[in-house]
Image 1 (cartoon, helix red, strand yellow):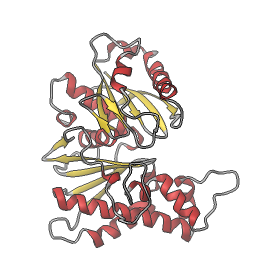
Image 2 (tube, helix red, strand yellow):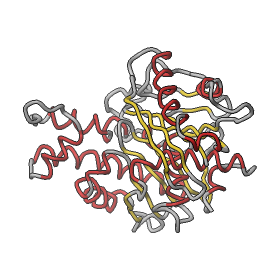
Image 3 (spheres, one colour):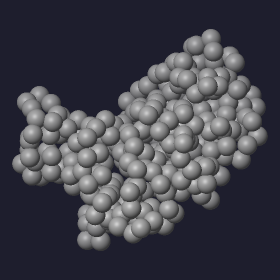
Amino acid sequence: MYAALDIGGTKIAGALVDEEGRVVRRTQRPTPAHESARVLMGAVDAVLDGLAGDPAWGVIRGLGIASAGPVDTAKGTVSPVNIPAWRGFPLVDEVRAYPSLFAGLEPVLVGDAVAMAAAEHWKGAARDVGHALCMVVSTGVGGGLILNGRLHQGRSGNAGHIGHISVDLDGSLCPCGARGCVEGLASGSAIARQALASGWTPPRGEEATAAAVAAAAGQGDARALAAFDRAARALAAAVAATASLVEIEAVVVGGGVAQAGDLLFAPLRQHLDSYATLDFVRGLQVRPAALAQDAGLVGAAAAARASVRGLNSPGSACT
């Protein structure tokens, strides 16, 4: 049994995951993303409290942490773009100090999108693929790479961080400091902003979210459909660039925005035909993630599992 945390800009989730990659207990809290570092860590501790009350906690062999990035897996620190109070935050040290964690049990940190890639390669839509990009499109946009049948994390654990590829040289300033990033065009909040800018308004009493835009698009609202098309075009440009660099054969897309289904996937496939034009990237497969909202948790467990088994990376655990 493994414990797993998945920390993002919207929610902090925790789970107990068995050796077969099955989630046997799950708990979550909203992310107090604009609160202090200590308040944020309090939410993480509260999620751990929800897991520690389960009898299975007494037999966990490892604990994996998937966090929004950038991360530094060597230092055990995180600096999520959408969580301003955490800059170089020593997350691994903080989790290691959790009172109910067994002495000697070492938390393992991975980026959330890298965790998603590990999970999809282990148990999901990339299980049969040797070269793939796995993407999370949610509050932010992230990615992880499967190359030569193994997870490729890079030197600091951030390889595949596609959300901060610039696809608009004159675009808006991103919180990361660059301009025209994919995340600023294709994240859930970006979709909502674009729809609002075009004149769409959410139903009375509802917030302007990507889910609300998706509902309107499903009813044929042209402004909502255009917001999803713009996001899909940005994603297609970044995916095609990635495919040109590392010759992937498939892209797996998950996260909250991907729950919109064909509202996102249909224009994404259409725009890929325009951007991925070289012979060796043409015909790139686009697959929905199979593990939905639990991918980050399963991937974090895969990281812990790989560490316990003495393997070099979570990708080694995907067998």
